[in-house]
Image (cartoon, rainbow, N blue to C red):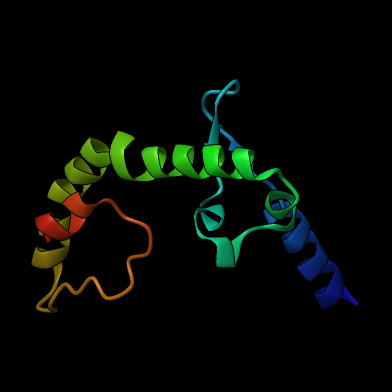
Length: 106
């Protein structure tokens, strides 16, 4: 029973189109699973097509353009530290949604 309840809570939490910002209470962010049709949430699927297009466009801008500088700065700061911390090779095999600048920094 606990497992089923937990899965229902996760499904409910994921079933949205935008997420509130914790720092700036009046702001929100796109839910990344809605960027591709095959991973859309149920609430996103129920929207009219023009709203889906607008939210996908917002998601692309948010993820890949507006945060390009932030991703680049973070990569410049963290990757050298990770590289010096051990003798392992840094491989970006499954980094998920990242701007192109991150792979350039690697």
